[in-house]
Amino acid sequence: MQDNAASLGLTVRLYDELTRAILAGEIQPGEKLSEPAIAAQHGASRAPVREAIRRLQERGLVTYVANQGVRVSQPTGAEFLALLDVREALEGMAARLAASNMAEADVAALEQLVAGHRGEIERNPLGAYLQEEPDTDFHIRIARGSGNLILSKLLCDDFYPRLRLCRRLHRTVPGRGREAWKEHLRITDAIVQRDGELAEILMRRHIRSAKVALQTALAAAAESQRPQRRGAARSAQLAKVSEE
Image (tube, rainbow, N blue to C red; front, side, top):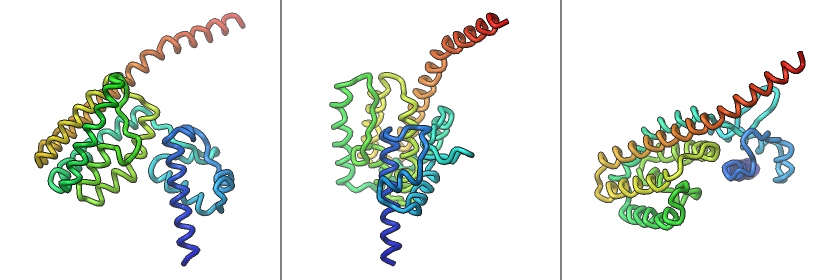
């Protein structure tokens, strides 16, 4: 029993460490995960490493590639947009439930948290508005405050890590951070007023705005790459002519 408990504890520690490294960019998207290397680095056997990687795969952070092994996922813009569709429904529900179920002390803490983000926005008005730590993340606070353990686990443990990986690969448009913060203020006000219907509407609108911003950023990125692709095609054509 003690051996099983120790193995489980090691698996959790390995999973947490690998998740942190992936989301921090220390292990890059597309990079291969080597079981022997990870086991040697952490002084572990292959079994808990394999289990930790399996959990990462379940959460979409790594992908098995035939004949290549396990690599860190490289979510596309289309996959990010699909995640936001799901996020709209789940977080809308979480906001509605939080308006009814969140403890008064947690509501006050949420107000303080969002007010405290003002300084970050004023220092960098055109920057992104990303809360990297769970204790300072607006959305995690609301998910936990929903009072629904299944919804909270689904969002905090399974959904948000994958979303953070997408954010790392697909940045949004300049100035979106300030608008997102203002939307957080309005959602918080609805929760303070215990207006679940309004909180859900505002949260859904907030996620849809994020989706529009992402679509704008993806379109701009695609447009900027067109001249490069044309240039590459032209160079290839000239090279072919010169060989003839």
